[in-house]
Amino acid sequence: MENLNLTTKILVYTFEEATESIKKLIIEAKVAAEKAYAPYSGFHVGAAVLLSNGKIVTGNNQENAAYPSGLCAERVAIFYANAQYPEASVEAIAVAACHDGAFTANPCSPCGGCRQVLLETENRHNSPMRVILYGENKIYELKSAKALLPVGFGKESLDD
Image (cartoon, rainbow, N blue to C red; front, side, top):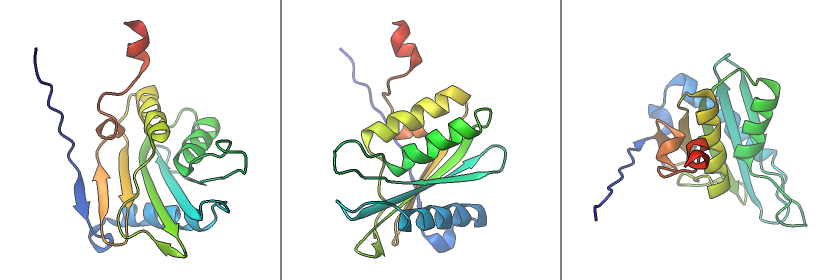
């Protein structure tokens, strides 16, 4: 028997400490969050994706009375990016959430399904994507989607 120890490194900083490119991505995610369709939960999430071709694509959560027919912001943005720019890898994704007209104080982390999609997209392009999770009080930055899902299910899992 052996132990497998996993460590996730998260860079923590404030919006003021962010680079200009990260600030721009966060602002795009916040604008997208404000446009989300979330009449049931009232929890508005926006995502902004920076592609290797320099384009920024955004998405937001889309709820539906027939749960779980809605879709999370991260998946909306990633699926749109992959459909419109299949040759471009994702360099970074920023996620922001608001509730009752205010952005969350602490970073909002992607759900399990979104983590899997981020990992698949990273593997598809064989290129790590930075994951930037925005909160009014602090920002979390991870160097790769693998940090969110360290024991993920991927193509190699199907070959075993």
